[in-house]
Length: 82
Image 1: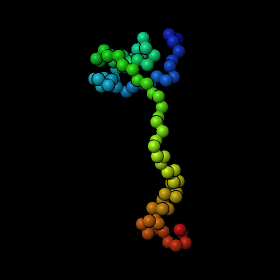
Image 2: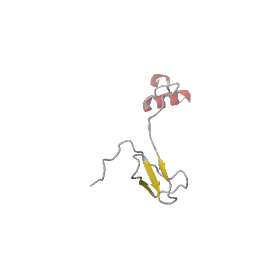
Image 3: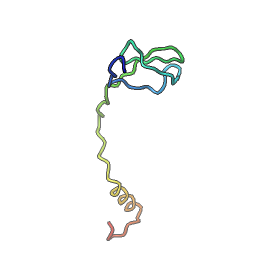
Image 4: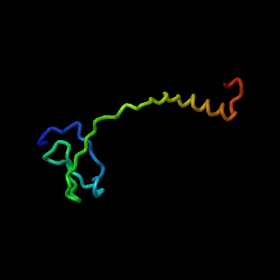
């Protein structure tokens, strides 16, 4: 049984930002805190979301269309296949 409900916004870091240790445990005092047992530091990690890009990339072509375009560009398609 958990002592408190898990925080769905808690990101799990892969390593400590100071010593690169991987022996990390949730900090009991703060909702977003992590304790590194290698260097005994407590740090927080929060994920707010992704920033909207200034320019949206063009939609990706389907795999079959990308292959056809590549073959056409390199001269591997005959006229009736185009």
